Image (tube, rainbow, N blue to C red):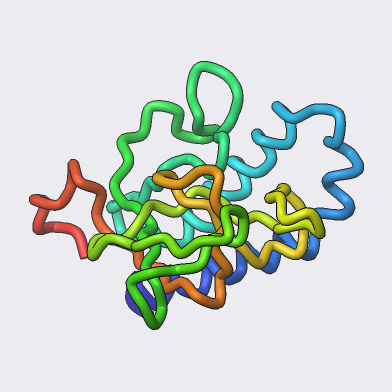
Length: 167
């Protein structure tokens, strides 16, 4: 299985993990946002980054959501340099509907950087809760895009694009 196939699998599994565990975990952390962010970041590093490592090449992604609390946004490798990004593009169109603003957002050819999975509630506000059927991207932090309308791609980060030893 190549890195692109592994990425699709681990990314999907992480979302399923959040949906399956959120009710239990959220009850324990509901009054401690810092602890919740630490839990999310730790699991992001364990369940998404770790399986993508190939040989001696480690994959380090931008932090998940708000990242961990403390001197670094990371848990296990606090000083790690980001090697890859998850880029989001419209599945069938260049414009994707934002469920918060109720307008279409034009996605760039490069796509936007994935930030986290979210839910849209009955008031059309985004919340961190299951079902995690929407995403936020770095470039539009107050928007929510349905996962069903997005393609996700693992790409080298801008600082590593000249490194021919990757992918």
